[in-house]
Length: 116
Image 1 (cartoon, rainbow, N blue to C red):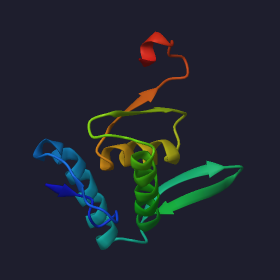
Image 2 (image 1 turned 180 degrees about the vertical axis):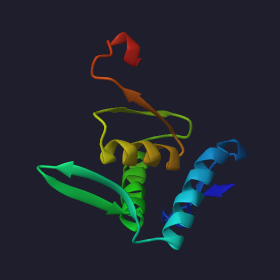
Image 3 (image 1 turned 90 degrees about the vertical axis):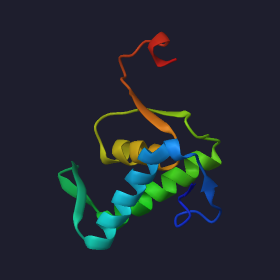
Image 4 (image 1 turned 135 degrees about the horizontal axis):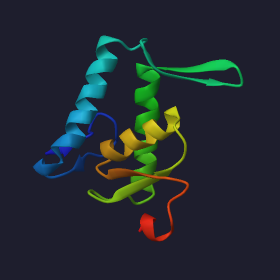
């Protein structure tokens, strides 16, 4: 099965077992087609709201997914995300799945052994 041919210049071929990645990608694209200017996420920073439309969210996910692949993310390998609750955390998590990987959060309180 070829996945992500619309987002990337070269098709990335994955096995059928990566259906979840395809479903996330399809659902995000379908949402953008239905409601590109709809509010996807918002966060208040310095007393001002920073907002993402679904179209902006998709573009950020594509950018981060491409970066993960360029950095060497392989199918079924993990992207570990350390950070606090923020839109960028969610963008990274979805991008890791879209790029064919698995995502996991790391708490700032985790020991070194817990992150291996």
